[in-house]
Image (cartoon, rainbow, N blue to C red):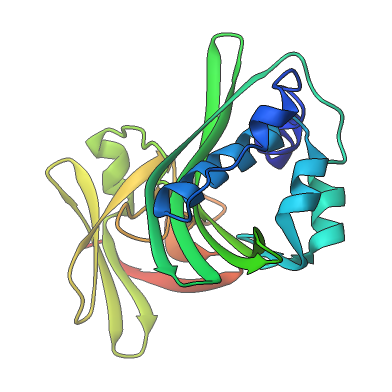
Length: 250
């Protein structure tokens, strides 16, 4: 969804006066950095690349939540590459803003940024935790590093009847000496491995579950044989997988 959450936001507020967007507070206080952060977000929505070229240090480095690192030129080319869209209305909010470190010529700030847009009567948004580092260069605060980490949220579960949940009940072997027991407790599927506390598994669909206390990307997927009988479960998180074979139905 990057094309929605980032690229289509560019230039949608192009009518905002440039002078207003670039007018900084006169005192180096924590409020200066919050104001600068909000003006930066508005300039981004307005497609104001010039504002960014002035704000970003020549040594600027950006690291996104996929781990990719971009320098100033590559970052600007990627962020300001697409034309504005008139069919979507963007919005953003900044919360939990903190100045972690502020010295005479150096400052680090963190905050939670929500970016999104409305599409007709529908809305889409995403949260990211940001960590920005500023340096005072020739009398102007310039951004030298920016780190963004997407805040992932658990998906919305569905409901499955008890008779469907009962299909997964049983004992599974993860490894020699490590077993996993699947039960139904109070209308929910539960998993308990050897020497571990039980966890609740919430259904996303038939055979696919997730633990709301685990990584939002992790899934427990039950495997079936050709006849439709559950024969194993797989715990999958990214490119990692652990398989447990079913050894009994009780």
